Length: 339
Image (cartoon, rainbow, N blue to C red; front, side, top):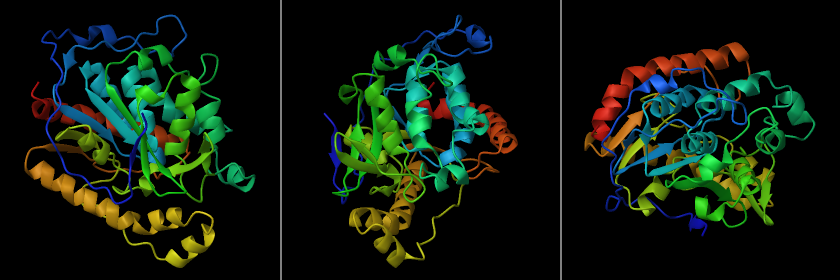
């Protein structure tokens, strides 16, 4: 069942959910070979060698800033980690599906490949009415086995993890989360990820079963799916951010303009205007959780890529910088996980 969280819902972290740990850990030599795409000889899902017991893995969005944190997904998979709960919003939905399908190749290419794809977007795409990011192409025409970024549906759908992908319902202002129980094939999954990632103004509204959706960042947490993790009973969280430490979102300067632009969907205008306060409040709660030892925040040291950046050199550079930080922080992450 789709989990809809009303617009006024806020985090109240509850009891911890657990899975049985797998005590054996194998070496990472099996992952040393260069990863290959799904559908080609040699493709394998990254093996599970360590099962996390009680920590939710939460991915923030941020457009192409997500290429930096895609590197952490790779490092977590190389380490053989399995999380009982994985969820994300916007670009975080891409991390979610790649983590759950355990696809080392796709963690990188889902972002880097966009910088070389002439159909991915840009201002020309925006002028043609397809959106700055051409979400129809990116999400609906790249994931099949014979397309540019093939997705391993079998590995994803067979995972025992709880999965949550969040989007904002434009007509009611609800935050909606889909899980594996709602998604019965690749044709169901791709529109959900597209809806979760469709930034207002820059990308068109996405309809699923006649219901209009936009980027889940318009919801009550400002774009970090800690509400869904808490609703599923998780108190401890590894939260993967795409903003550096100390960042706070400034207030929107033109609320009247948003109300005019979204006359058809006033809840979208409200979500845009309220997002800075919602996001900053979520950060305060997460930082308090970090001080109490319940939350680990992975935050980029320095991010030289913007959410709309499609320049190949910057995108690849951000990924490589993310790898350096992810590998440096891995021991601290493992300590937080109790491994």
